[in-house]
Structures are given as C-alpha cells and as structure tokens.
Length: 480
Image (cartoon, rainbow, N blue to C red; front, side, top):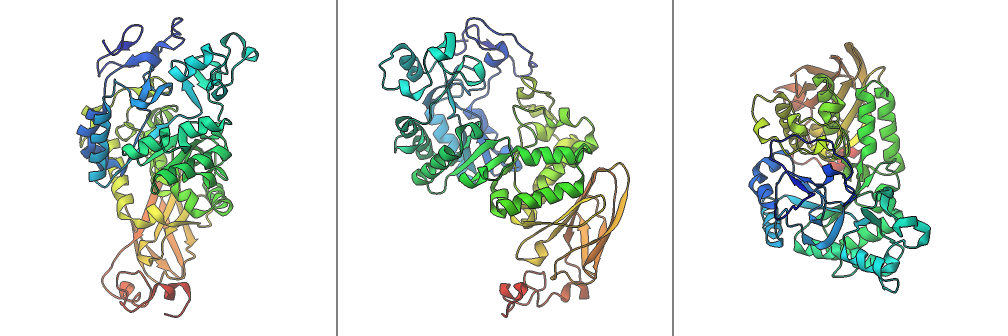
C-alpha cells in the first residue's frame, strides 16, 4: 500500500481481473492502476521455467510509471519501485546471460507519461528548452498538448527534434545506450509504425553503435515489407493474422503459402526469420479466447512454431490461461497450472522441443508445395537431413494428396516420420503421399533408417551417412 496509494488498488495473486471505470482524478481506468504484485526477483526465481520455453526473455516496460502496464513512462532511467531496484535488474541480466539467454526490454519512445518531470516542466514553462520535445499549444484544446490516442495520460514525443533523439537513443548516455550498458540485449519498440521508418532506422543504428550485438524489433501491425528493412525484425502481427485466417477457414492454406513466399521475395528470407510471430499478446485475446476449440487452438499454435520467424509466447498461453481482451488477458501467471496433466502445456512443450531439435524450423528457408487443399511447404537448410515437410490441413475433413517435393537431394524411398503422430511416408520420384486428418498439422522429418534408403546419400552433403570428403558445394551443383 505504501507503493500503491489510493486510487491505485492492490489485489491478491489469485484474484481475477475486473473491468474498470474512468477515474476522474487520474484520468486512468481503474483497471490500469490495479496491481497484483510480481517483481524482478520473482522473474529470477522462475528462470528455469522460462528457459524451458525459450531463449529470449522479453519484459514489458519496467521503467518508472504510474500505471500497472507501465507504458506511461515517468522516468526512463529508473526501475519502477513496484518491480525492484537497479541492483535487481543487474542480477536478472547476469542470471539470464549466465544461462546463454538474452534479455529484451520494452522501449516506449512514441509517447511518455504526463507525470514525467520532463513533460511537466515543458508544459508549465513556455520558455523551456524541452518544450520542443512535445506538440504543445492552443491548437491542442484544453489539454494544451497532443495526447496519444486522445486519452490524456500519454503525451506524444516530437521525434523530429534532434535533442530529443539524442536523449532517447543517439547519445552515449541516452536511454537506449544506458540500458544496453546495464545489461539489456535489445529493445522491442512499442507502436513502431508511429515512430516511422526514418527514426526506426536511426534508433536501430544507434543501438548497434552502443552495443554491436544488440537487437531492435518493432511492433508492426502492417504488412512487414520495408518495416523489417529498417530494424533487425518486426513483431509480425501479419503472420499471426495469416495463421488466424487459415485456422478459421477464412484464408485458404494454398493462398497463405503463396502470400508468405511473396513477402519473402519482396523483403528477404533473413528479414522474415528475424521477425517475431505474434498470435497473442497483452492487446489481443489469449489463444484460448481466440480459439475455444482445443483442436483448432493446437492447429494455430503449431503453425506459429513451423512457419518462418521467431516464436513469441505470451506468458500463460502455453498453459491455456483465459482472457478475452484487457484487462482479463493480463492476469497473473497461473503457476499452479504448470503440471503434466495440462494438455496445453504438454503440447507447447512438445512444440518447443521440436523446434529446438529441428534446425530447419529455426533457420531454414521456406518453399511452398503445390496442393489442392493444404498449406504445404518445406523448411530446409544446406543439410539435406534437416529438411522438414509440413502439411497443414485446415479443413473439416481428411485430405489425402500426392505432392511434388522439389528438392533434387531427396532420394527414392527416403523415410519421413511425423513428429506428433508417428505417421510415416516415403519419397517416390520426388513426391510424397500422405493423409492428413482435419485441423491437423503433420511435421515430417527425415528418418535415419538402416539400409539402402539412407546409405544412398553417401555423396549428398548433410545426410546421416554422407562421406566426410563430400563438399557442401556438391549439393549446389558445383564440383567438390
């Protein structure tokens, strides 16, 4: 209560979230200033579990702010006291790095909380040198400033001001530079599209200047082309909506594959691979709300793990947590749901392990297979044994098809096995025939089978039985 005085409210960890009302005094919704606890030390205590789900820990804003969501920054250089101290952050960063993981922070650089001292001083003093950091004047009505989305609690930054850009990301003591030096490995940029491509490029270059290996990804609710060129990657809501369209039968699987290939051609394979696939987050319904049917939910989630890009798991989705929009999708983590009887948890764990095991699902290129009804594609690398054939059936009936697999390194009678069901299929003359049940994804991987079917690969690079003398160039049609 000392940290969260009224009208902020404090709740027990197991208390459900409730819809709120506008608080006239603060201009916040009461659900925005409701707290359930949780801090950086708590995150440290759960790193074993977090690492079991992924290699990058992305924290939503931790900087000092009035709300519980912390997108209304009041001090970019301080850890919010609700979450702990700078020493706690240092301990977290060191613990994450010790495990070989990476730590990404949420950077809110399109707007700032109106409780910020910088904003308050600029608003009160027309002669303030920082007044040019904001859009201020009579043209903005009673507020006197441009509020993001008109809410009154967030003031938009005027990023066109060079001094402001120095403060936020460019100078050696900027917000971005400071946190990278403190141990962060990168930033996820809130509402990246509103920052604009020019400034996104400037910010990304500055981050790389401050820390060469740093990562900058932006929230992009648009077709990713061009946006992914100016950052290291985007949070690809586009790919998430493609998955939704296929899963809900509103986008044909064949056409979805064509659209993904078109995006790759218009940008690059690397840009797509570096982007995070978002199917659920703090602004969207959780997976269980979006897909109440468990089979359809598993179908959509599996696509997230096999399509090109990095998987972004919103905490609790791996457990089947509920929440149809805010604030219900922001409830505390259900730690007691982490158990072997939880079907959603078991499925997610299988997907994580599958992706970690199959190199092609992490870094492989993408090639659609021509199909009547399936979203069918290859994920492949320079090694033939890595090749994965994905056959996704979004329809309500069984689909049995024979598909051409256009990879000259796949030889006759090679055995492939589905990761989930154990179903098997063999390559015949560069084709594969398989039966896929409704709303099911088959992920076929090559099997190291004893006998001629594997031994025939002795002069094909990257197979289980390849001769040591075979050069990678041999599989590209060049002489060894």
